[in-house]
Length: 482
Ligand SMILES: Nc1ncnc2c1ncn2[C@@H]1O[C@H](COP(=O)(O)OP(=O)(O)OP(=O)(O)O)[C@@H](O)[C@H]1O
Ligand SMILES: [Mg+2]
Image (cartoon, rainbow, N blue to C red; front, side, top):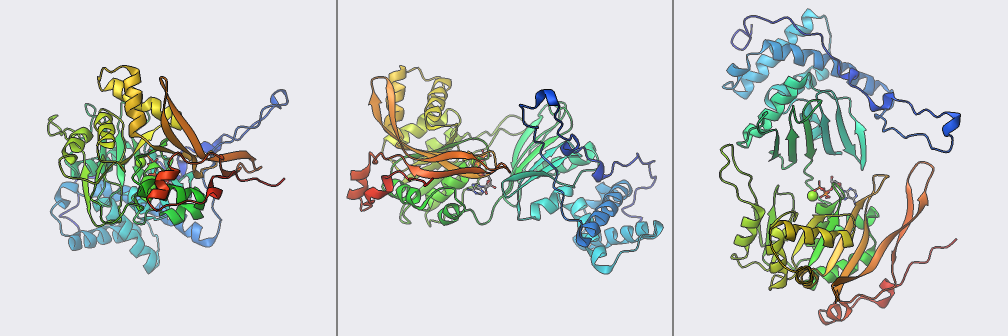
């Protein structure tokens, strides 16, 4: 029936590894012996155990059938011939093969399940296979693949093991290849890792064996169509209304702001939200490795740096973009992340007329952020006395906003710190707001509150002159009862 696309000789099939057999970190139950009673049992990340309702059972059954059919489809389809098939042809073909296999196995599905199955099989052949459903699921924000049988997802700030898996490493590699070849890149033993942007804007990184020891590692930061805005972040408790008012004053009066934080702490989200305070009349240029920012202003020029191609040519570094941006008459420059030699041009831009510029850095505190900047300058091969370096930093950077992903998965702005100048060789800073942790609930949720430190902003007068006269009360520490 499907001679055109069917492989002629069918190979003996390897014993299937059902998705459900994926190694589960939840398998190791916490144990505690009397001799170690001072220690708390080790909390293991558990795979999500959802409700055992009908719908779930149905999904599980579908999943099993799907895994089985995927395998047979991939073994039966002549993938090379499929390249030229039209969508309709392919859908018909998949439906025909599925019908045949289902009949052979005496599996009866209702119409809706059949349609769903055909859609998923199509995704497999034309889309990104098991990843497709996760990419389309709006509630999933991160997808982390550790080899073919383990896919973790992040939902509502919590990492959980999904019940989705690839057939085997070959299957996973096929999907990785599909993604990277679509953007003209290659990944193999000699180029074992790659960054790319998916069609829907999601950020993609893959590392393949043998560097990745137990099978390919894939991380995807899903593109969120509706980025969290300032109001959302206040509502979620990422920071307070007072902090938002302060940040509005800082951004609107063109202070240079750095968002510092660890991986996945919400730096890009914060930067994006802060950018909403920029006046619509300003010309903004953004520079990113993977375009993630979604500025709401009218006058925005977006740039994306580019790694070298397969022959090692054609690289356009963030620094190249930044240097060029300075010739493009920007009012503000926003660099998605400063991590290398572009730091020099970034600081210079901040110091020379492009005030109001913003960027993010990987650091765990404001002080640590300053050290990171110093290190980046040293690594860029600039030989300058440390005092000169610090003086450059202290006059370029005005405010450091610290974003953190706390242990309960919540993301908060744990500190807002101002740089006030130099005292001798040391950069002086003052913290204006901070998140004060006070404890942990029994189910490991962080208890704490935001508070001002009692220190009035170094830029109060500037804020006032620019029409952002913040009431002195916002600098008063929050007193918690009890
Ligand atoms: N306050 C928040 N509340 C809930 N979710 C948040 C919050 N801040 C960020 N997120 C979500 O967390 C994820 C990571 O955020 P983001 O991309 O901003 O982090 P990042 O620090 O820039 O990460 P990376 O280091 O990988 O660049 C995103 O899915 C984002 O939507
Ligand atoms: Mg980011």
